[in-house]
Image (cartoon, rainbow over all chains, first blue to last red; front, side, top):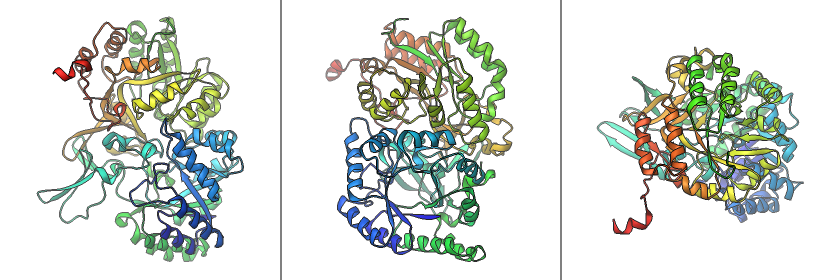
Length: 325
Length: 311
């Protein structure tokens, strides 16, 4: 199985390559990708240099153009696709049908991967993307159990990539407008979720209150570490009870299921975290590389040290386990 | 029906209603509501299907006798084998038009006329044209789209009618996990259908007691109710020909009557807003997405822009 690693900066990109990534995925510095954060991503020149570096080391580069084209401004996405092809991207990761159709027609030789944002969660959906656009790989939404994935793999004619480590969307990706409901900015349209521009912290008595737009997302007593107010990881009131209504502040880790994922027919394991620093990327990629190559009985010791890097230091296997539902 | 005149449609009931309530709701819609199209069928959770199945054929017959065009809705999230099979059977066996709410339905419907539901991501004309080439004849655009995008998509796509959500809590997210069941101490696989207790959604508030969202099984909807009223005229001018009313647990016949009156010039939009707040007092109105703002926002518009400077 390939290890697909994130890079938000040229430095993180080189770290990922050096740490043993089979492929690094990244995006341009604009709203064409779903990690459109200040200070992140690549200019055309930086991407060209990064691809050259990766190629010398035998590593592939995937370019994420995985937001939905804003009506009337499609040229921004078309130009990004043209530049990614010209710079030598090994694959484009796409979510928008209109953009997929454009890429399939204009660059029939270009390898096309279906982004998790496209929400292809069943055999008929994947077949549609293979037949209509020649998709070669699908990144599955984090809504499936491992047995669902195994069943799917037997029925489709393209490779499967799944997220195994890092941030966890609770909602089906590419189908969530919670962020824009509170802030006007969404993953689909702007490449951001719960954007920092709309985050505020305020002190209220002994509590630190985190807000997104005009909504309180969490409240932390003095003895509790405050987390970032990602909307679906907030604490809310329902009837008379309060708590984490959708998901606790946990991150995904299913590296202990490597063998089950391989048996299910998965071709590539993906690490989330283009917004992470180079030290995080280097540590996670090198550890997961070692774990992937290690014998099963040696894996646990390798993976244990990664728990310290996880959000809130707590992890979940998410939808891969049936009881998460 | 005058083909050039805008019409109303009734979206699928997103919530779980008891079978009798569900049936009686549609009987009254058939008899009294001025809607042309009625989209019907479970859209949110495959576990709920048995609640309405015993009544489905009688309801469809009653709606058709009343002259309504019945369209069957597909599931928004298809992951299990039985959900795939359900969708395939629905597409294969139906004599009614179908509205696709996920990619599998899209795939299965290729080459025959169908509708695209608001849960399929259509953000630009390139996507709308692609869907039209594959057989889509009507597209209900996602609620997140601003007016500028709607106008671009409609003007850039031929041979399709466009529909916009004009009333109802907005579908914002769907998950493999059931937050509704979890809020009541269950998980999805053992949910005991607790969402039936909340026929208008289970309100979720912030820790500062601000109303924020509502849970509907595996779906999360807005607490606010989308209400496009003063915007209808501009939408019609930009080529939108159908306006969707998404059922809430209120007098939907009155809602439909109100929208029909505004759409056909028998009521001022501003008067309609005041009246709508009486018909559905449970939720504040919002139209923020349409105006390119946060979806929960309410953007009030002066009745007559020309008089604004003198106010």
